[in-house]
Length: 115
Image (cartoon, rainbow, N blue to C red; front, top):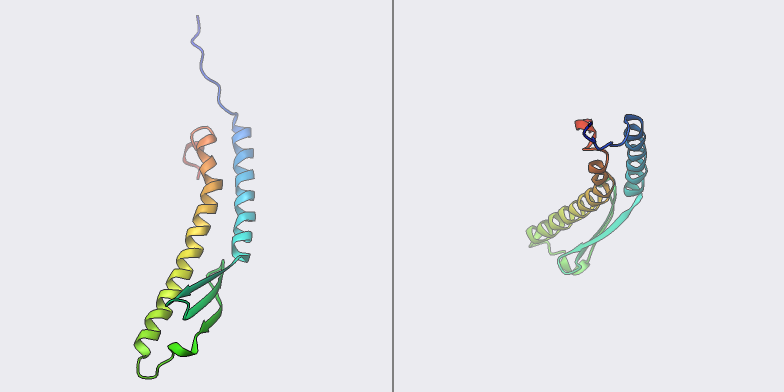
């Protein structure tokens, strides 16, 4: 009597799923790059609009925060705002891509390390 070996997806099916995933990832990447995010720092004294390509497209500074005798504070708030904006784009992009690549485990053990 032969032992029953569980049959997984065929190589063609795995390749078709991998191609679909690659297409989904390209579509999602284009969507993510087109998004814009509004970030503020310093209690709203600085606001930044950044796109999914991590390009700053708008920067607003409240006039009351501009103090020629305290440029250091303005610099600190600008740095905080830019870093938060970049972090938001990266975290969102990573989470969205993980939704797609998380399906790798469903492709018969991840296609033996092809990805």
